[in-house]
Length: 341
Ligand SMILES: *Cc1c(COP(=O)(O)O)cnc(C)c1O
Image 1 (tube, protein in one colour):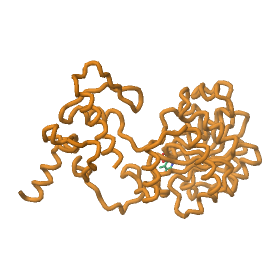
Image 2: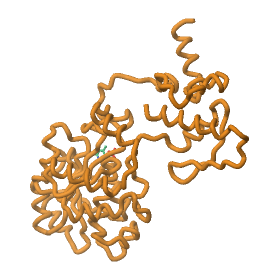
Image 3: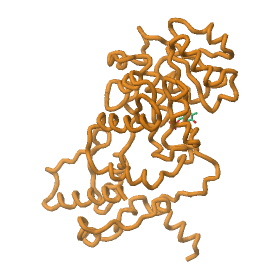
Image 4: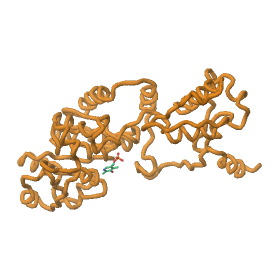
């Protein structure tokens, strides 16, 4: 067979063909499912996906960056235990804050949710009832000032909270725009060359009027000094992507800054349920529920389970014939093991 045909044939194998021995009789496939090491898989080939040399940059659409080995190790190790999410945030936040010269920090699901949580924190303060009320801003401030050239796509993370943007051009515009409804002043780091007002002046204007300032530095590391530069400069909140220049998980980001604002921001973040940020979680290494269900379905023998809430499935046992409990258990174990490789 020519190489091209081999690749073609491999690429049309069903995804569940990845499950070891799905084409073999069950007995030979799972004689010792509990001890056999998972076979080396090539997930990209199984899915018929093209991988490439990334000479483009840290683009989300290209899966942004590759995690460093020590990150992967920490991530995999942490996927095997349960912990209280708020305790993880407390401890990880303290470490990050110390390294980045910030009073406090919290891990978010990307820079986008760092912006959203930070904005929410500024609006609600330390009031869970207000967090539950967003994006209805009744009784809260409702305007965010930004330079025209800084009003770009990602700013949707701010407007999602219900705020209105007020565009300015000059420092005088800022002075004119500030009123009792002004909640925050937003700065987008990479847009600085396009605006009249630079970072230090932006911070100074915020301080003069006692209005919190936020800097979105999503992809602006390296240089590594940027991790603390804008905290040192006096921005009240700094947002960064975990999966771009930081080379962490693409589902991660960091919000850092003033202690009171970080605490307030966390009121809108998972695990708290009645919030606009509830869906913005950072994952352990897991298969999502639907994919997991599909793999069990397409395996041999085919197994049906019911989808549960979020990342869970429900097993009902009273329809099982004697011995099938072991088969289901072995298949689930197999899937978990493959997922963690
Ligand atoms: C990528 C990017 C974001 C969003 O970051 P995520 O980590 O993908 O959520 C926000 N702002 C800017 C300027 C960006 O480049």
